[in-house]
Length: 456
Image (spheres, one colour):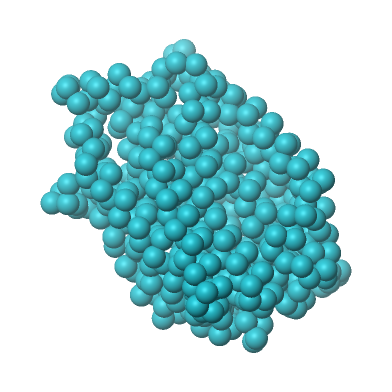
């Protein structure tokens, strides 16, 4: 073991120390980082919604948000394979494979970003048409999407790079970079939209520039580190065995993300048929809804890293205990957020729009969605824990069947019988309940198997 490796091992608090304390120390930078990352698009929505109008608000949300989530979500899901592989090798102190995983992930980020840039720019009109995007929103939505896709490589490099840093226990520096770039994005939005009157194009250009800065910062960090995961441009290469492991773990996550987003796109297409006010209300609610996903995603990333490193270090008891602690913390925070939106949700909507019709529709959506968020905790945490051990196929099947397929079936059957907005929205809590039960049963089964193997 080299001196660098010894230093890294000595500082690795994920496999040592009090679990709840170390989990929270790791969790909060991820949460804040996710928060600032969400602000990229939320700031766009707030600026155009308040200073341009509800049509512009619908252009930067609605169909465009679903398309971005579909394309980027697939490659980010794939990159989660690199995060898990790196976490396991880092926990096992395998310096050679840590380096190979790092450089394979870097090559993948570059290739994936370039592919999405080309395909996204070319296929934007067709994707918007498939979602039944209202005609009055087509031009603005297409403009926003094409500028966003032009910077797709920046998004990929940052997300994969920050995921690799978190895999080795560094959740602070990705946060610092996001704070810098988020502030830059807000300033650019105000200058280009309010000052230069560029409308939807202004917020898209602001996002493009700030995401480019975040990618540059993450590259510099990975190249300057003295730890075993140092990025060296000359070594960027697809290593076959590592890439195979990355795909084994990441491909199911990527497909899961695609199917999840497709189900949401079908819902978006159904909502689009109710007009601009509904699209704007769903867009504004989506920004509020993202607060829950920021918290749950941060807990999910945290538990995947904790389980991955402890699994690699063969500390199975610590691995299981970290899952129980994470579940308790996530449920507590979810309940707090639910109460916050019950009492203050209407005022939060006013940050995005002053249109009373849009606010009324949004509040109706919120009343249906809120009770289900605590249930979703079990899906996010248990799926993240299973992913950390490399168990991804069955969780993907459970998620795709319980959430994606069920949601589509619900829309196809229930909507003709009761064509109302509430009918569409009920598909979310119903699918969450069924999927959560399946995850609890499967996770319990897998842990009993693991315990029997340890005793054998």
